[in-house]
Image (cartoon, rainbow over all chains, first blue to last red; front, side, top):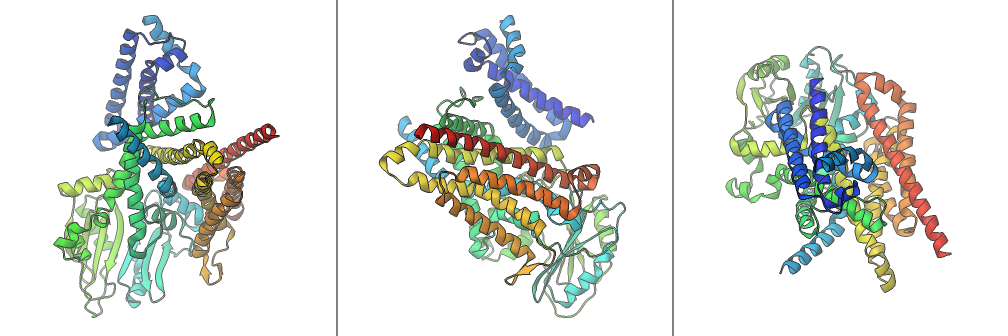
Length: 107
Length: 511
């Protein structure tokens, strides 16, 4: 069971990481209710969070499966995570609104 | 200079894609299916839908088959032992009429009826790496060329992508077809790049001895077996012609297990069965690591004495075996197996959308100039993409329709299945050429019908319908196959409906 939970956590970290990176881009920032450009500070924060979450995903993969399976799992799961972010942005963009609003408030 | 370089990469990407796209799609599609080759075997050969053997079984059940192989002077006798994904024992040797293939139930030792199919491991998987073209290894070379092309396409695709980071997450399903297709091509290409690059590279690395033959040809004077004997430590005895017995299978297997701390065994392989100089090779099953290892123990056949054994790999070989292992996925990791399947499908989408973009961006211009290019490439694309999917579905359908032991026109059952696959594939190209306007839609309908029929026929011929399959652990592979077939049928139906709506809209506009 912890195996399955960890797998879910790895996917979640990859998904949220890429979501943060996507929101930091002008196009998606604007699409999600922000201004024309993502403000510099918000952009840096989002990218920081995004990369950090991808590293979290890597760390969790290595913990779950060790060096060889873990790196392979990470390299493939992040693609699935990124494709899921693309699908969300295309068909269920409101799912990412709360995350974008939060950053807009903080910014 | 920058412009010139990008333009030349664009040219390479476009033409390598158009010329080799069909081949690449076939290889990617068959590779994606090969991820579940054993599961496909179970679906196509109901006699091997066995529950896993509960206790260890005696390998002596193989003795009568071994005697038959020895009497037929077969050069080898090879046995694939059960794994989690495959509960049956698979035995192969040669007699005067050709290869003899048997599947054995390890729980009872009985020989199961001949499956009469090449199924996943003997048709789909070899198609993936050699296209079933044996002559002069041309199949391997074509696949190698496609693998190299895939890597070149990955790199040139990144170079010609104008806004790789700005468009990293961009897919706009509400745009015009041309834009939508390019978005999809870019997204699957860029996000799938690590997997696609790695899988093409590792695929090439597996066959290094074929693709870079001069290394061993020069050092070993062209003697491939001698080279492999050194590289892998194989013990290859010379046949004496004197008869000889074979010591206890179980005793040698027990000794091999002891050498590897009780590890499970993957295969048993005898060279020169029935000869005074026979050698039995036993391979280790290690599903717990990525590397595809080749640990093996060698025993003198008549006495059963251990000749030599190897554990682990030297550094250069370790790299090769790691890359091979991550390509072969013979390891135990169901999450990765499904991820590979999904990313393989993403690769198929990448290749198909590449074709579609080429067509959409030239359709108008070619029509104005009266050029034939679009029509030819469209025929090629339809046959390569939907045609390949239809041929695969037809392969499954005919497998459930033909009775065991069927033969026609001098062809046995496995050959009839394969003929069906190729003839249906060929027919899809003809159809695409004859009815270019409606071929995409009609082939989507055909695919939906065939995939549903396969599920229905599996139910009728074996009684293992979806609910039954889901409620028995050993039938989960059947359930998985049925679910994927139904999903495929649903997607094909949606695609066909959309295409028919589009064509109606186009007709109204023209009127």
